[in-house]
Image 1 (cartoon, one colour):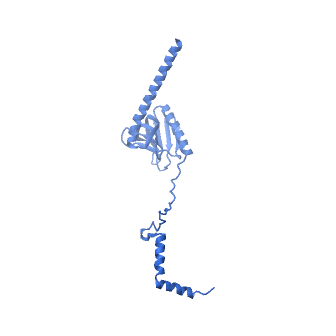
Image 2 (tube, helix red, strand yellow):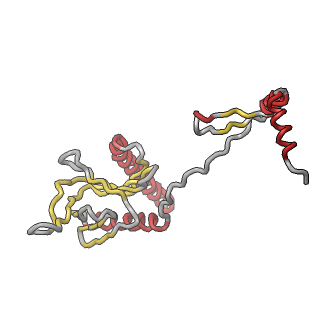
Image 3 (cartoon, rainbow, N blue to C red):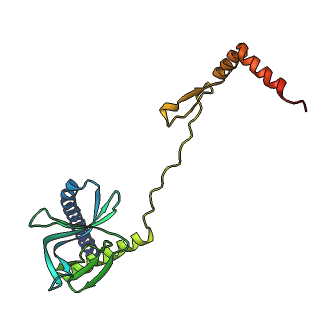
Length: 221
């Protein structure tokens, strides 16, 4: 009977784990759908945290330092179906002015307790800072960011290559076209057309006489 009770207990644990997993999947879908309404190319939420406060580093002026960006809310690390393939999004609870940064191999990360700082590849842009109330959430986001950055660095995007020019295939009757790219010089050529032109020249007495005179005037070898 003791083994039976243990099996019942194991079944209850499995049921609770499955229920928790289903709730997490539903929660993910509930967060993903609003993001996809703005960007249909978003395919996945890699990780998220419920609340952060965004800061920008003010480096110019009389009093440089960190300034609140007036952007607070949940932060998402998302994956997209096309480039840019990864983004950091802070959904602003104050307005539609969200913070959206495209992850790039040249990013520089600097993390400390409750804070993630990152410098994006565009040096004209201010350095960003994210404050987390719970440092465990900061560690979770930092870990996934570093893993994603390693993936981007190991698989850099290749520049798009222009397709090679395609040669025009001859038609079934052997026709080809010259000057296709220039409609003013478009000429259709075929074996029949060449034969017709040569026959017309052969019947032209003036043309035959001109050729005969040229042949007579050439010195004998």
